[in-house]
Image (cartoon, rainbow, N blue to C red; front, side, top):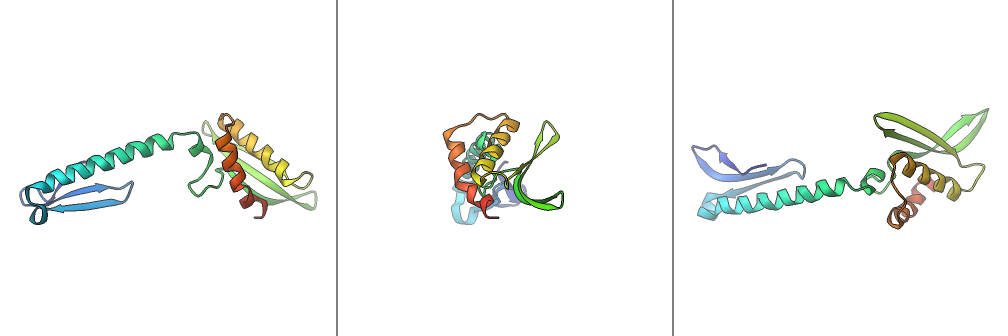
Length: 150
């Protein structure tokens, strides 16, 4: 993004800094700031550019491939499935890998929730080709209650 003259180049009354990713739109009025308006707008634009760079780097981290911003696990949900006339509780995994959908169901009924959840965690990490780390395991533990009682 760049600093824009507003309302136009021939009749500049203020400078606009805008970023749609962060939802930022700020104006620096020449009437209020004088000759410093453009300099202030450029400084603000640099701050936003730096913030965008950090966001881009953060989004490339492995942890962001596993968890939504609210902490829930991407591609994991707890559902009920009718198997042979009986209803089973399952953890359903559905993840896109190389443009193809990979699906797995893990039944909770014949094991403890913790065993099923650990199996789901391992399967998700395997599909995403991400190594186990203490940080990832800790976040999985924090969000387990969401799937245990839903």
